[in-house]
Amino acid sequence: VMAQRTGPVNITADYDDGDLTMLLIPQEAVGFVTGRAGNFLRTIEEEWCTLMFFCEVGSGDRRSKDYEKLAIFGGVRARRGAELKVLSAVETKVPGYFDKLKKEVLDRDRGKDESGTWGSDSMTFQDDELSYALGKQGGTRKKMERSSGAVVQYIGHVAIFSGSREVRKRAREYMKWLFDQLEGPVYVDGWEDRDDCTVVDVPCDCIGYITGARRATLGALEEEWGTLMFFMNRTEDKGRGRGSGTEKLIIFGPTRGRRGAELKVMSGVETKTPGHFTKGVREKTSSEKGFATDRLILKDDELSYSLGKQGTTRKKLEGAAGAILEYVGHVAFIAGTQKERKRCREFINWLLQQRRGAVTIADISQRDDATEMHVPENCKGWVTGNRGSELRRMEQETGTYMFMALDARGDERLIIFSHDPGSKSASTGRMAAERLVNEMVQEKLRDDGDRQGGRGRSDSRSRSRSRSRSAARHLIACSLASSLRSSALSSFHLSTIFCILCSLDSTGSVSSVYLSSSRIAVRSRFSALARSIIAWKAFMFASCLALFSSRMRRRSARSSSRPPRLKASAALRSSGKTGLSSKYLRSGQ
Figure 1 (spheres, rainbow, N blue to C red):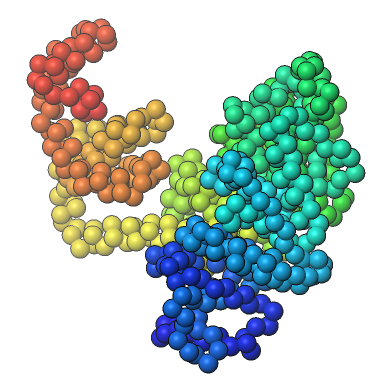
Figure 2 (tube, rainbow, N blue to C red):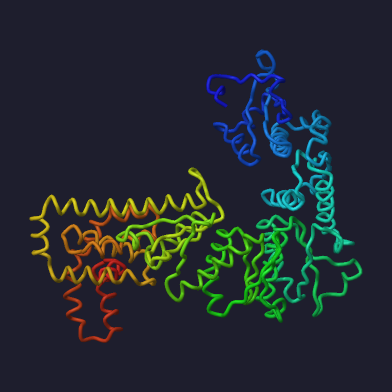
């Protein structure tokens, strides 16, 4: 890696310890494979966890004018995935090139995996078949790859399946069933004896709901969980139509993916037909250490609280615990290993305890999924935000679960939970959340320090400002700051109120508490760029307020005796006469 800074890297046969693939790239395709500033190669490296670079071979002779050597370091599966990705790009630029290397590529690394059955199979498509097998933005190819466990790549009109004998067989079967659906109903004989599929009985009146328009819902489930899903029908059942019974939805893929997709389908069916899957279901806690499923029954209010707006709370708990959490009716299904299931149940219990008051977690020293942080007393409100908005934002960004909890002595501290410890450079995990909290604490401390320093340097000025502070301006500031608590405010009104408070703060009419509350509200609503634009236009908004204030006072005095409807009409007429925007007048009022 370091040698690439000074020139071409020389690779000899001694470097090949069974972890190297050398690939000839035509000169006219080298730039296409490299990408701008090496971006395409870096993308492949990140996807397949490999090391790739162009090199010289042997004693360092000049590279051929027709070809350049691409070195790929990594494991057998990773090297094959990266190699096929590069060959697919080369075939796009130089059609027919793969035909020269096909035999060499298919025979490479044969039998060199742990099972001793590693190899590659191929399948040739026609033009119309290729587009169907590829799917929109390669979605069909990706789901075939994830569900079968094989490396699936299309090079021209040839599909390559690489992996052990078992996963290659699955990939070919899945591809066959995919194309069989174009001709009519598909039924998998002997599915009861297979270990790579799960079957769900779906009521006939729910099939359209589960499938979605043009198969959109099933496609989204396949993409999310890495599975292949379709309804099974025998050929003789084609003309019978859908009655009041059920149809079998078969799900292919790894165990975790199949269970996640199955629970998602069960949740959808339960929404459409309550009681279909949950009638007579009881709570269950499995003692299985491996992958299993627990059940937890929730009450109405507990279900809505643990679900959250658009399922955000459920997704947060699921991501932090590392388990699969899905609500089927009033039953919470928790799937995963014993450690993941236990962690998820604890998270749900702590979440429900927060509705009744403070949560006490005496000691976390024995846990490997928690980070404890002591937040200064004057920073707690700043870190948590309005109704916990800042904590929710950091949870969503880092995939963690965070809340303030009491220890054995009754002292409050912040605890960050996640199965992912994170790293110094990662944007998710406990370390990332800890960095965000520290940044907010430092920001609050700096802000408080600047305010204290400013008062210390100019006490006389601050006292004179306080003496000259207008009671009317202070009343306006109090009213505007309290109105920030309303969730019904539009973005325009919120930005206007913030600008007015900033302008009044420059005259000493706003306390730090009001300004801090406005900053928190604006931070939760706007991006950094929008906040900078709002602050820059603060003076302009304050000038507009001063310009309109006298007219507004006269109008309010005239209309004080009128009914509310007539007041609004008078305000609109006045805005029309003066040519001023009624939006500015309403925000000023």
